[in-house]
Length: 184
Image (tube, rainbow, N blue to C red; front, side):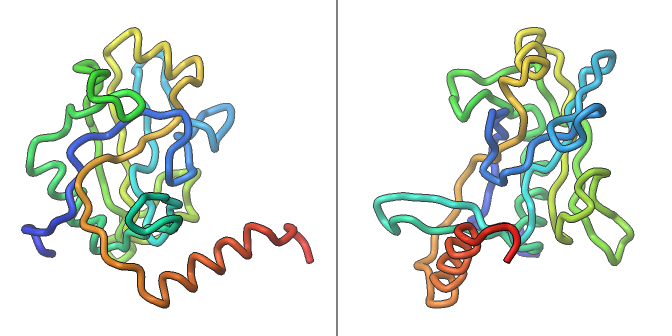
C-alpha cells in the first residue's frame, strides 16, 4: 500500500442520498439504515469497491468514478492514521460539522483474512469500507431517526485521471444497463 498516495478522505458527511447509492441498514427495514435508540450507533458502508459513482464536472463532463480495493484500503488507513475519527458533518457542509459524532468501528473487507461485509451488505465486493459511528449530538440523532440523513458520504481530495477508452466504455454500458428493463 502506498501511504503517500494522493487519495485522502478527511471527513464523512451524513447525507440523505449517498453517492454509493446504499444507505445504512435498519433492523426493521434492512436496506435503509441501522440505528439503535439505546446505543445511538449508525453502521453501514463508507465506500464500496468497484462501484461506479456518477459525477459531473466542467473538466470531464458526465462520467463515473470507481475506487478499487487497493485505493479504498489506502484511504481507510490514512483516515484513521491522520486522526479523522471525529470528522463528521451534515450534507457535505463544513459549517455543519458536528462534535457529537465519532467513529467507533472501521474495517475494509478482506476475504483472505476472513473479514466479510456487514450483514445486509453481503453483495459488497472485497475491499469495501464499512464504519460504525456513535451519535451523541441529540440534534443529529433526531435527523437519523427522522430519515433526514440515511447514509455516509466520504469527502476529501482525489486526483482525477483522464478517462481512458475502457472508462468511457464502462460508463456507456452502465448508462445502457440503466435503460434496460429488469427482465428481458
